[in-house]
Length: 116
Image (cartoon, rainbow, N blue to C red; front, side):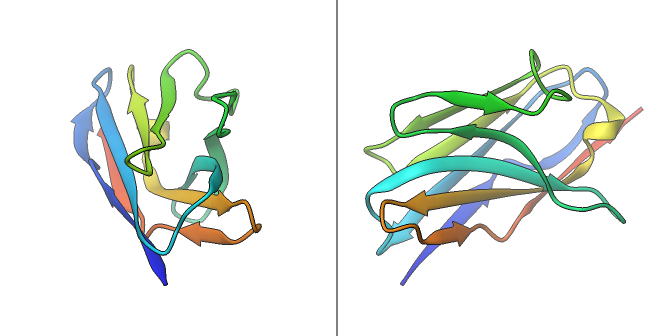
């Protein structure tokens, strides 16, 4: 079995920045797509950003120009650099990794709170 471990969440003022990290451990290999999703209280989980093995990225319109997703394949790690944070970015952020055998793995979530 394998697991994803996230870090980097916290409390920040509006306009500030945070960098999230998510590292795979154990038997998680041949990772195709890595991504970050978020879920605000009372709302459904939504996609924030994804990145393919080849480096192609996709962003939700709400985060374009402010968030940057990147990955280190050797470290089996995905990052989310979040700049110009807004109160509406407040949510639990979850990383997801999909392997070449189409298995999905989710992290436990890390809380991001942006104060106005």
